[in-house]
Image (cartoon, rainbow, N blue to C red; front, side, top):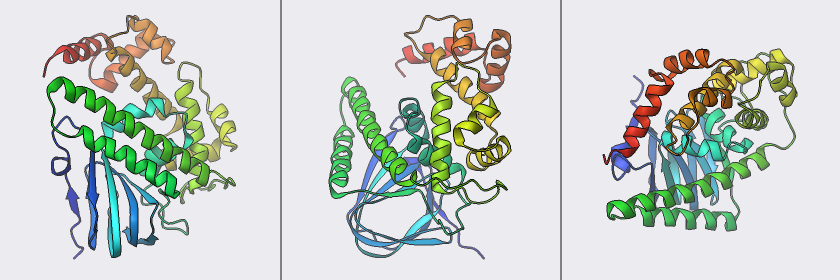
Length: 320
């Protein structure tokens, strides 16, 4: 009978229900069986070593190693030797907020969008690829930013607490940006060809290549986006690109673009500083027909664009 995998919940690690980020330190990590979380985890090895286990893959840890663990990945630690871990815990909605600012980083997409979609496909020689190695200076910088986040977690008044959350997210954005750049630099060298079958492992270099495509999509949602253009940017035939894209993201390029446009529209509709019309929002997100946009948005959110904007702005004004 297979051993049941423990799931670590949000309420065990986040100070309150509104918290999006939490820092957890384990100065002396003991052996720990494979487990999952209800949040994204960035595990940073500050010192010591051991063996990281995820699925059927095992690899040795050293100071400076950083692991990226999405909520669905089971992992654990064996043979720890003074293993000192800094764990940065992030709710999915916090990552979504950074996606817009960091969309130009191919490494961001490779780590936080393509990596989770491709879990379970790393049985080949590449093994667990969602990791990087930091230099001593980079490691020191990451720890300093994490300390700043910890300072913001201390109890404050409501107004000060709101300000501290903004600072926490700013420091987390710096961390995610550094790690995304690092991953893009180290994994993006020497492009590897895509698997023609689309069913095998997406190697990390391919993830970075596809990440560049996702970055371009995010920056050009208002423009017509054709499969041929995306395939050309990836350096693949349309057929190979379509298969590689689906294998890495879990969806087709067309569906990905449509969801990205609707997500961007939801953000613009919820912006209290915006006075643009529904038609202007539609056009700004790549929808040439505002009636089609309204129908698509209703299926996407359960509300019409007008009702969604009113509900979001009312929620922002509410003290609760």
